[in-house]
Length: 80
Length: 169
Image (cartoon, rainbow over all chains, first blue to last red; front, side, top):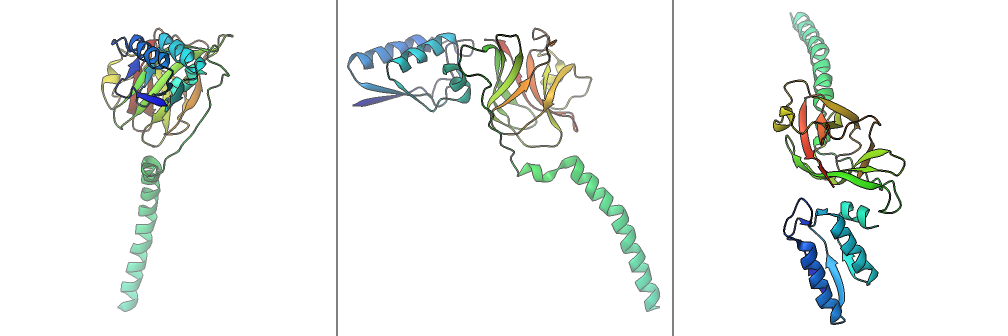
């Protein structure tokens, strides 16, 4: 089973360009899916900005075999 | 009579060629019209192996002025103090004599499409391509507190293609 979560409606993952606290929301969503043992892929199309908290979250999810798709070059640079 | 007419046309033809050709060449050189349908794509990798080095210092989203421009400008600093500007997911119009500059974000010129007064800026080099990821070295002496905007600028027509106001990362 897999569950693909699309965050393309969000301009950024936390930081100065988005005050919505979406890192916390994304972390919560990931926890809920992974807790059920479901393979998870995050579609980052449309996410143009990410801050240090967002990078840390993506690193943590990668360590748990979460697949990241369609990341921008900016995000790719920072999550290596 | 026919010989005279032919000679007159011949002289006129050569005058037209002599005057028109330099005008055409000058017009082509100034406007480079072929660049409006030819894209120059580059894809430079980030000059670092991991995200721990270098660190992003400032970043901003590019917004179009004269031409539609998008992407992100980010300034990174390596552990030995070298700084560079990286454009990612970048796209703008192709054009003649386009450069990448740092300028003051509060410069009134940045609110306009055409620069009408002296632009206080730091030259980073000619634009490498109008699409794709690319890197530009920063001079060691540049004051990033002062020059806190990256601009894509056509020197020939003093036109601002796009601006990114840089905020601390």
